[in-house]
Amino acid sequence: MQHIPITDNHIHLSPRGLGVEAMRQFERAGGTHAIVVCLPSWTMGVKIEKASDFRRVWEPTLRLVEQTNATTCVRAHAVLGVHPAELPPLAERMGLERAVDIIKGGLELAALCVEEGLAVGIKSGRPHWQVSDEMWEASCALMRHAMELARDVRCPVQLHTELSPRCLEDVGSMAREVGLPPHRVIKHYSHPHIDDFRRAGVFPSVLCIKGAVETAVQQGSDFFMETDYIDDPSRPGAVLGPKTVPRRTLALLEGNEELFWRVHVDNVERTYEIEVDG
Ligand SMILES: [Zn+2]
Image (cartoon, rainbow, N blue to C red):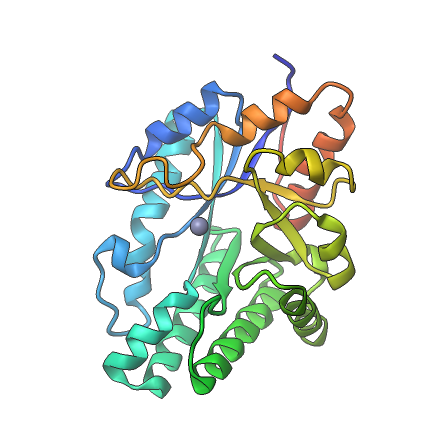
């Protein structure tokens, strides 16, 4: 097996799922680095009443990242923040204004965690489903706030958004207004047509379904690879497994060594300002 660092840019670990065992599977398949993204409050059984409750949502993610680093050779890093689907039920329960304040506070706590070295990025986004106009505007304002925080603490945002060309343009121009450089604006769950993202000024994290990486490599190395593995035992097979990114990389490595080095090392180091050692 070739020695090249291999990074999954968006994976989840849950205490109710495989947890660190998923990272061992990743490691056995050739994976070396993982960006572990927090799960939404409801999957962690936390009822949000105030901003600091998000700390309780993130705690299991942080613990599993720590355990991964202590017990495997995989280097894991956390991305913390607030999923766009948190806003509607919270607004229903306590009114839109209060819900927005709480989520803003949650995003600010995530930025603080980046400053403290507990996380390397902020998760945010806006609904990729139909919502009311006021909900839409509030969601866009929250996403912009996340970008401002990311700019201030020099980290990326990982965004859950729609995937239309219009959305990419929107997100790209919002980032330009805020002053967040394109390599720090990560579109999670991306299709592999990376030229579209380059034009919009957004950085794709390509979902590694069959054929996707083959398409992406035709257009260069400006992308990350991800599984969005959710580590939920009640939904086996609902997503790609933890071995997918190393397997796809190693299957295509011959003749593409330099390109995959840029994907798994250079892009990761530049975006997250972390060291990826080979
Ligand atoms: Zn995810």
